[in-house]
Amino acid sequence: MRFILCILFGALFAAQVGCTSHSWTKIERTYEVGYHDVFQRMPEECKKWMMSVKKSQPEAGLIVLESHRVHDQILTGSVINMIAGDEVILKVQQVTPTTTKIFIDSKAKGQIGPDFGRTDRNVTTVADALDKVWAQVDATTEERGEKRPGSSASQPNAQAKTQ
Amino acid sequence: MAHQTRPNAGTQGRFAAIHYWLGKSYVRLGDMGNARVAMRKAQSCEAGPESNALFNLQRLQEDNLIIVIQIGAGAGLIPQGGDWQQTAYKPTPYAERAAEVFIDGQHVGSAVMIADLWEQVSTQGQTEEQRIQASKAAAKSIVQSLPYISLLGVAWDVTGDMRSWALLPDRILVWSGKVPSGDHTVILRFYDDKDFELTRYRQTWYFVPVPAEGDCVVVTRAARDKCNICRKEQ
Picture (cartoon, rainbow over the protein chains, first blue to last red):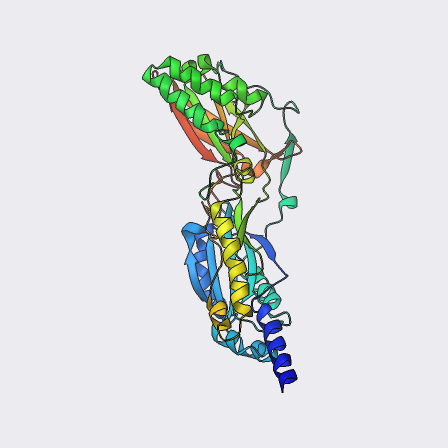
């Protein structure tokens, strides 16, 4: 009996240590969209991926999505996580007025044991879905023109006579 | 951007933009002594030899057109750690690195950097908040390991503060010069790290009014298609 209790407590201890599971996949994409448009469209768009907006703070560049995908959660068998759900964070950063960078990460709240890649799937699901909403920006394809006059930066002309 | 903490002792005050504007204000108030001190402090910020030419009391008095150009995107605050208990700034990649200024079709020089916000962010030390967050995460892992009260640990959210100013630029460049009073056409050309022009970033500002007395300050931000009337979005 004592041996069984030790086994049970040991298993409980091991399970508790891995209570919070976060994704190993972190994705960063730059899209051709205005900063505020991201916040405006996200509540509508995330419903299509079975998620909902938990927190949206345009002034802080932060969107937190909540995911309750039961078919995924049954596999991992975490009852607490079925209640608490997963969190997907989107850190939004304006690059230019027409381009916005989005960093995506996910965390399983109250996860007992491994999540079998569920949080990674959260990240890739959101990234793939966003790819369909907005076009990605590739900085290497930016149009280039002539070489700069004088390869090193020239001194500013303090006495610029323009007339 | 450094809303969380103070910078390291060695880098405190190394923000030439503040001293530059302070000096400009003192000049307009007629306080040359303090303006000279501000310029000396700006030079001590080690912004570079090109910037030091800008931090000159005589130029501060004479220049009547100042063009402030914000380039790039500021660093973003992202979560770190198993429980997202910590946060760290990550630089945002961007194309433009330098700007050349043309007034009425004449090349008048380069804009020089007076503030590098990534340098400000990357030289700040460990904050009190980070230490508290580390302690909270350790306490949470202990609580989670204890029988009966482990559920409290699961419910305890120790996520760090991920809010950051998402609209900040990465660098601030300034060009200043003395031009005749009246309306001028200012053209800005932006260049990448290999000194090739980013053609879609070019900006043209017509009828920039320079007064006979006082200064004209133009503040702009580098962006693709900013001066393209057919752009998708401002």
